[in-house]
Length: 159
Image: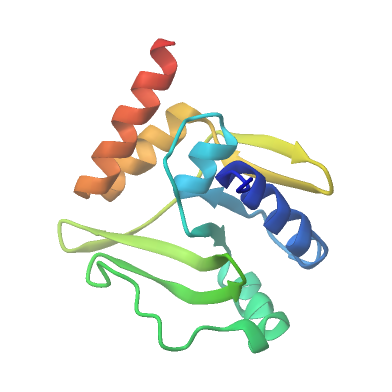
């Protein structure tokens, strides 16, 4: 039987938990993995997006240097900037975005998580934005795939 996506995310978070405990500043799981951890049904994701400080992004780049995927170029690079790194962990990757900023009206605006929620599992503890905050963040990103995720949140909240 194939392992479900939520179980894969839990397993990877457990695997990297020791490294995450070394971070200096608050960090958050965002994106599709945050939705899945929050109970929203998302068909699939291939990575865990970690929003960190720039110095913690540098720390993870040092710790995970042997896992860094240097050939990966993020989509929508013109819209986002950060201290970025993508790291391979078998079935899933981890994308680290240190001090993520989004270009809005020709200005770079930092992404902030305003309503963190703690998610605990077997061998890990992380924070994700609340579902309301995830909707706000997805609106902030504004891409078609983000609007699809907003609809998934709304469908989940109607249940």
